[in-house]
Length: 538
Image 1 (cartoon, rainbow, N blue to C red):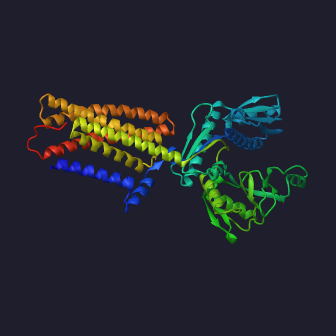
Image 2: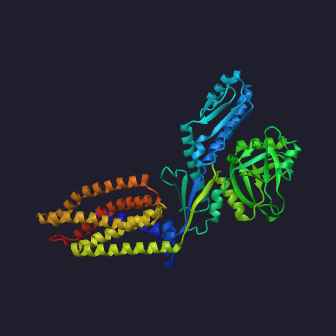
Image 3: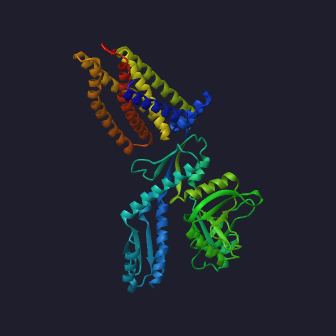
């Protein structure tokens, strides 16, 4: 065997070994073969079974939050510039369709301050358009471009946060994607293979997880009415009322807290579950450097006062500040370890920019997946056997060459899916079956070219060389056009269609290697041991 053939043999052997390792790892027994295969080949929802959820992001919540934030900034700006006003509030969009109608109302502005108001709005609030309702009243409406940007940003952040929470649970095969169409642009499709009880997942995904730490002005009070009565029916400036839901060890209570939080979830560096006093589970969190400095200054000047730890507008606990605290804190009241772990997970993943509601929930049984796998494997094996029989019958010994290339193609394809941690779905299996025909088609092109060259009087070795040379460009041309089609499927398609496209592209790349490189090696290896070659079994 010459050096060129020896090099090709090493490349092919190395490819087979790497592919085998990607699919089966290093098995120590027959059971390990199956276990490693199941571990490395990740199955999608349609094959493995699991949960299918459709969520709708309540985008109007993000518009309200944006307006509320700008209202607070606007009040500060107007007070600094001595522009008096009677009130600043907003309307209440109740549905997704009404989100763009968000409006900030400014009432009671003096006539001589109109120009100053317009200047303040144009300088610091470029997302809004100011218009007059009367000589003293004005309204701000959001610009269409800003509204579109806010919708897209809300949806993108929601998808990112949900993906982070799901990945934190170790569900690597899950998919989160936007549903197509203008009518459901705010809907997200979540597929969770292997999850047959989605109740915990729904709770984790549906929690906004907005953590805020507030200074407690007064409290606790038994109810809101008692809190208002304590201040003569009028709350102090820059304060609000928050409730602490009833628990097994304490009744419901309300507190009067500062309007602006001292620390928010955006300031967190990490969160984790731990056991506190008396073995009870709690969630500890650490702050970034900037927040730690601010928190340290606050706690140092408020020793002996209460601090409200608020999650999603509900007070989880209101401990008394005993000493200066800088970069850490605890959230108590977890029911068990899982509750503390789930809270830590959603805090690490970040808060949702808007709430979500569930429009659809389906559980796919594992038997459906098993049936799909069985039928797909049967279809693939039947197709493979039929193709091999036809190739052997029509091309004789050269059909063995095509069979080896075909089997190696399938091995490389499955190994590539394992290494890429791609999820195999039913359309992916359909792509594998389609590749059987496409792989054979490449060999047919080469073999027919070789037969033509032999029929034209060329020697066997010269015919093989000409057959591969002339068929190569045709194979590349057909494969490139198919890859371009797959690119469009991947860009514009949904999850299953993308899976089909990815499987097909990987198989096409493997097919060029097997049908040209491997098949040519087999012919050259067969010819290398013969001094004269009078005929070829093709």
